Length: 359
Image (cartoon, rainbow, N blue to C red; front, side, top):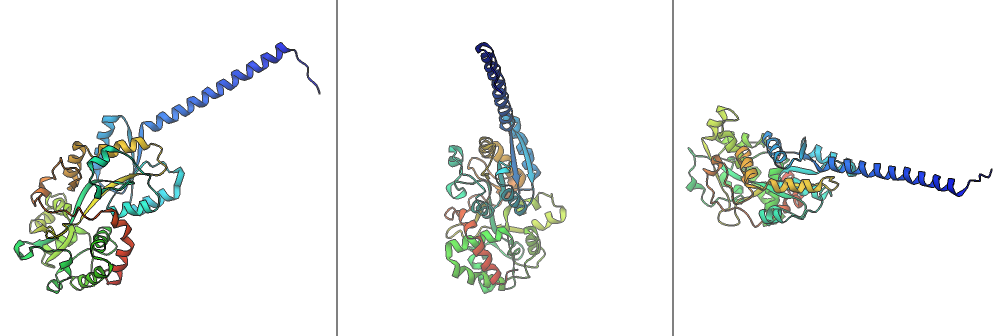
């Protein structure tokens, strides 16, 4: 069938079609703008840190910036599995966790994207960050001793390597080999001493254990306070948590019987680790994620962190909480060993520990 129409009518049809297309284009632009504005005012955090104080800190960020913070909390393995499985459809912007070993493992899985920020680079020492993730707080893994049985002078120049000395046979407690804090400690020993020497040390340490490994870090400190062992390996913030009374009067009393000793003061310094975060690969709000990381390095945020979690600040303009500061601030930290090596040597560390009989 042939339809014949005059030029005037044809022009009218074309004009109407153009108007319709223009409306569609304008509607599409409006929709995209609406979606963009919605995303621009929020950030989605996947966090393996279990501190109510972190939520309070994010509220301060929202108050300052107007950016809403949504938090999905969980255990590290569950969260990283979810992020991997969701892939490009993952709405997460930032992954925050404790321990450089975990951050390194996430990086190796391709979960993060490279971030460029002058603020992050200037405020965080190079050994506590990578191009993909950044430390927001430090923690030291130290040796605790009972003050009524050992003097600090008896432990002068004690190192992690000395824990394999037969003089400590049956006198050491430390948590299990599946604990990431221990895996990172052993990874640092591999990085500094080599795998062969570390494997020998691990077997000697196991021989010196007062009992098969069990419990969390506070359980190790409690064992020393109760006389079940002479030395315990644990992170410093646990002693502060116990001394604060937040874990009850019994644990507070136990903590008052022990003190931390900072190992390896005669060489590289005490093993340091971090809490930190990285911007996820498919983050829909990358700029907001970077803004939050930068906010976490402000003096206000750092004071909030150290006074609630008892970690060490990552910046040098803030001091630790007094419950930690009382044990000294002039100890030598291991600033030689890059914490990024922990993740790279994590599997090797676990293999050495397992083969040594470390439960």
